[in-house]
Length: 484
Image (cartoon, rainbow, N blue to C red; front, top):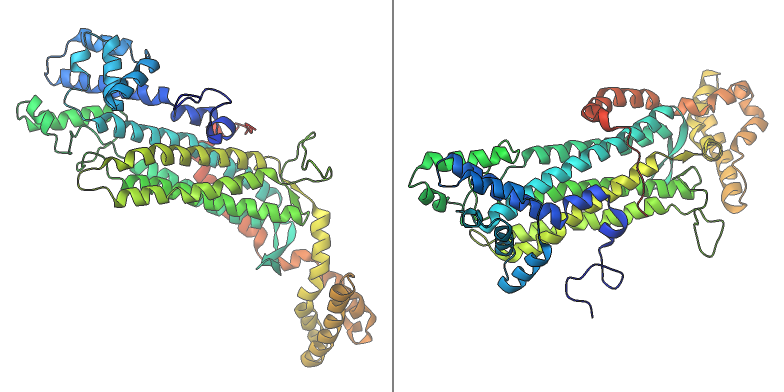
């Protein structure tokens, strides 16, 4: 039997998010090395600030801590945690073992959440730094796709039933608009993140007030100094032992919303693949089915939908956690947060990597789109035909009745016989409509049924999308690669 926690090989479970899907850079941000190295950095920042404000901490102790930030004995830390049943104190002892001169000032005045919560906030901020450019690249790729096909007519669908024509580019802008909202929301939540700071066991800073012999100003300076060292503009004034878990709700809510956007986009792509109007990339040696060699399944879009569902459900964890945090703190948040925060970002990372890969290789089949338009457009054109007949001197009511009868005959051919829509042929064969026979081609031009779609695409991209992407223009050239 493998030892508990052993995840080093094929005989032990490993999260597919890390082993199969997410990018190496996102996995690293949530790795043990990054986490515990940040703990040591926080202890160093605290000691430096305490020394600056007059506590008896020597330069030698500071230098010893600096020299050992990366010298982490994970085996010793695991043994210490097993003995002490306390992860933070296990790493205090492990750090102290390689910093014997500084051991007595490590974690001075702090509580476990000084390293735990502040590290989580640093990780959340840095994980957003990874997601935002990826989301911007997806928007950029789709914007290029929409611009190129801004005026390509296609059949619109409401209730997944044929509706008025739109354009391929305009439909893509529906996707882009949702993703732009997500980009703004992710950036807003990242900008709203505040450092927990140096607050003590119940948020009162009592231990630090004692260290500085009642000097409130130095306690405030300490909090500010460490906050600035960590790269945050501000910290919470009010905390319990932890920062409010409402922050985790905000973070996972915007990620869940991103998941909803991606699920909608990839569902549309899957439906269009079934109609053979559009396909995601399909590699030369890719196999769609082990049994059916001809299959070209939209596996990338299906993966996005599958993982997006998981991402959307994760927001329930911080909602419930925040609701049961008794008084200043209760520890039943800890194990849950270890899972849901990391999984949310690794999942979001995966679906953005995959969606970028999809958006860089979307294939459109204009002839298939044109054929479907030809099947449905005659019915949609009937109102235009009636108007043209009235202009030619006909009666609106007489024309309406003629069109009604011919339309039902054509519909019967489509539905009962499986034939093509022959309404136009019937109109061409009916002498009643001879005054407009020469106009039928113009009346049936698909581009005349798309309204302002092409102009909307251009205006949307220029006024809303391109300005939003400007801060990310230096990272636009990075290509997406699927891990598996």
